[in-house]
Length: 486
Image (tube, rainbow, N blue to C red; front, side, top):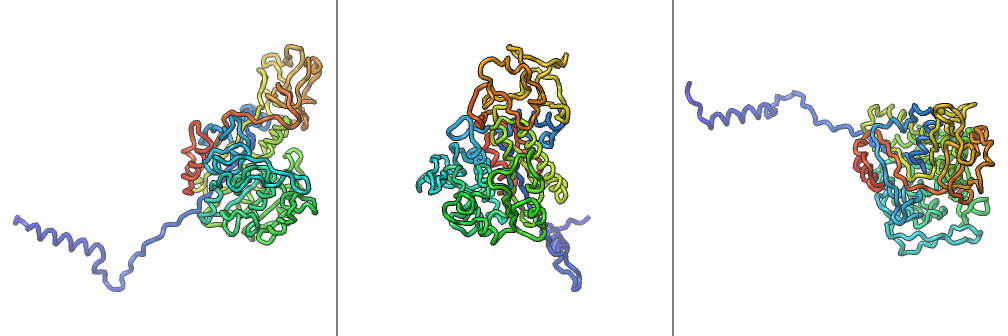
């Protein structure tokens, strides 16, 4: 076989390659145009159970489904523990803890989404005697960008849903920057597009969905609110939002026909779920799913923060039944959100759902209690007294009195002197909606404190596998940003 010169071989190869590339495509032959890949919207839903420590979660599980049941939170595939201490305190309040999640920066107690050097300065009294005058000063720290602001900068939609005042610490940390959480008139102004005090980092259209309580900080003092500047912020919101003030108006809103909705359903916080009138106030689950419907119209994606805020308030009151019921309502919102997200994103490849808490409380589970099962008519469950797990007999303390499964490290209901006066304590008392569990240390009514224990974090969907181990609350911010590309 004759040897073929190398130059000839190279020439033949080049000719073949050119032919394969269509160098001499005959006239009339169709060519395939390059395709642009379809980019799905990325969605982040950040659930925050205010004050929902691990013991509260455990008690809520037993209360709702019994010891061997599962809340939706329990089924999230990725989990972590979160450290919650603030810049200046071992035990945080909601303002710096939620701000750490939203900004990745540690800050002092009472401070909302500001730099670590910001000093919390108490508000002064206005002309009506309300402590709402801003004393922060012009050189007291600088604003730090939040996840919600990053989302708006990328052209995403954004929403804030809560059962507290919309201007309360947790929701405020998503969209405002201020030295003290109690400056709720200023925080309200940050939400109103185009008005004085508006947070321009929210873009020209602002937060797309605003749902919660707290209308008093949007209403002039003369009209029953707390604004001394005379501004009617609800009137201003109505210029660019479809507005609802009650459940009927909220239910009438068709998400397909609106781009922005605002609902302020109560003057202060919304009702505890145990007390909620469905004809007046929507549930947290209903607010969450309607928010998702509105936000999902943005083809780039959305960021939604959902707070079960009144868990915290019930714990401060040491009314455990209210706290556990609000925890269950919060869990129902998580369940509804996951189901809705799966309709368009079955495997949650483009949806990240994070569930966590901002801090713990001092709630504890006492004694070697017999299993109770879930709370129901005729069964106080975890709200009952401790009964021996072998005999079922009511356990007694050193003074011969029964004691409850749930107690608090501190709270208003501390027996002064001997507990023998509580010998007749039974579950008809302890299972009541308004029963205040006993505490080891007595404090004034409503002032049970936060606890410093690490809190639970659960995640599912896009990038959720990065949430693991024991992590600082500031690290959560970076993990969300990385997962969502913010």
